[in-house]
Image (cartoon, rainbow, N blue to C red; front, side, top):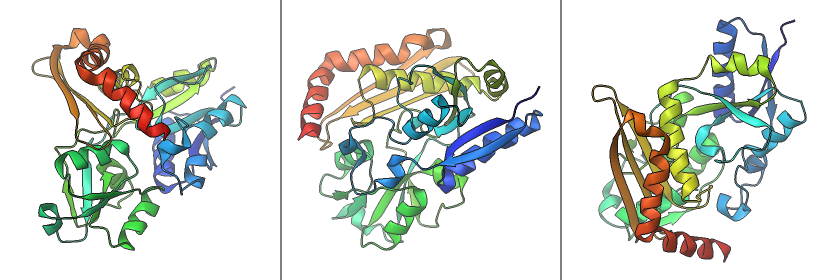
Length: 307
C-alpha cells in the first residue's frame, strides 16, 4: 500500500516554492504527495527581532509539532533556519543540492552611500555585525518578515539598501535590477541549502526522501552546522561559515567567522583539509576560535542579548 507523503511547509511564497520542488522530485520518482501549509510563529510575530524571541527554530517549531502530531509526514525548510539539535524523534532525511550561498545588497540605484553614511536593513545579527565590521559609520535597522514582505518594506522606506540571501530571491524570481554581490560576507551556516525532515520511525518516507539527498551538499552543510553548534550559536550569535569541496584536489576548503555584535571584533579561521577529515572539521575549527578569544566573546554576546 503506497501512502501519500504529506509535505508540511510554511505558507510564504519561498517556503511553498521549496515544498513544490520536493514534491516534483518525489512525484518524478513515482511517489504520491500532497502539500499542507502551516503558519509559523516566526511569520506572525514581526515586531520583535528573532533573537529577542529567544526561541531557536521559531520558523521550524510549528512544523515539528505538526509532524510529531502526525498531521504531516515531512517538513521542508531552508537548512539555515533549522536548529543544530533536532527535536527527539525527528531526523534529517535529505539535503538537496545547494544553490548559491551569496548574500546580496539590494539597493535603490545609487551606491554613493557606501563611501559615506547609509542605512542598511537586516534582521540577521551576522549580517549586521559583518556590515558594521566593514562600514562602521553606517546605521543598521531591523528588517523582519518573509522575503516578499522585506522587499516591500525596503521599497517603501528611505533606507539605502537591505541584505538578502541571493538564493531566496532567485528561487521566486524576485531578484531586482539593483543589487551587488557581497562576496566579502561569510554566509550563514548552510545558506542556500534546503533540508527535508521526517520522523525517524517512518521508514517508507525516509526511503523515499533519501533518494533526494545530495552528498556533497550534505557534507559541506554538516561541517558548517557543526562549527555553529560547537560555538553554541543557535540563531543568536553573529556566526558565518562556508565549506566547499574542491574536486580536483579532493579537499574541503572551510572558512568560519565569529564577530562581536557591533562588528568591532572578528575572529576568523580558514582551513583546507583532505576530504577524509571532514567529520571533525567544523568542530576543530570552532575549538580553535574558542581557544583564541572566542569563549570570552561568546559570553559577552550572551550578556548583551540578555539585556
